Image (cartoon, rainbow, N blue to C red; front, side, top):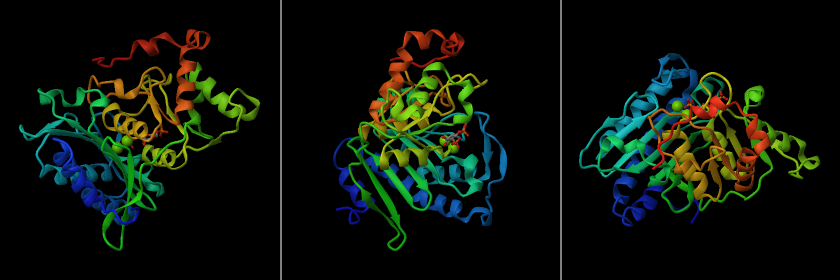
Length: 345
Ligand SMILES: O=P(O)(O)OC[C@H]1O[C@](O)(COP(=O)(O)O)[C@@H](O)[C@@H]1O
Ligand SMILES: [Mg+2]
Ligand SMILES: [Mg+2]
């Protein structure tokens, strides 16, 4: 089946399976179409009108690139044709309410990793699809476990779409010859244990003791409690890190740290951590803040950040164990924990 199955046939089959499925399939199809336009832009680099130039800051204070804005506009145009009740984007301060009858809501990170766009590195688009609650104003305050589908597209050597419709994870790669996405890997599984970790090590001095203890264990290799050696990678692009973990295992950490503004890490819950956690769990891995399962959390506000530790379940569990170690926890700066604020439903 690999190589033969086209994304549109896969979505067509899925669309007949559940009440929300038709709307979900249409949204994924629209995002896939948008991704080809975004891939065109990103692959043109400095030749495109939209280069890596910054245009301002988004509502969350991040530098916004021209390409962030253009990717957002493309996705909104493609999704705008569909009956979607609410659309949220990293690039918009507030969600946009749409079709009152729409059965689904969509959250997007139009261009992930864009701070690295000018070095010709893999970037991507992340999306999360949720059911419309009775009050559409609460669309993006649902737990991550409510997601109907999630995925991301990588704009790298390949344009690939990683997709979960709640029943495993498949990867579709864009085939330039036929112009369509074709199944490249089905039912992707992440090994229980791994030999590769990813973290921005330049922040070591700001980490909490449990995170430092975990990375020290990785670095100790066969001479430490892990009893095996680890390799290290840090790409600085969440989509590329997630793709690597889905391909050959690993654990990724963007924890909270003591830098001002990083009390809840860097990544956003609604359109980065939730969809990634859904995908990673569907592939047999785990995703946690270090204390709580990411999919059990509901955002208080749209652009809320969250510590994200995801990948092979043994390593994620080890990070959680270290967060329960009374000796390590006692030395964590208390105000850091006081700042947390998630809905617990
Ligand atoms: O530069 P840092 O602090 O290592 O952060 C890198 C992280 O920031 C991100 O670029 C944030 O995403 P955006 O580019 O969408 O803001 C992630 O892709 C990546 O994991
Ligand atoms: Mg991002
Ligand atoms: Mg982004």
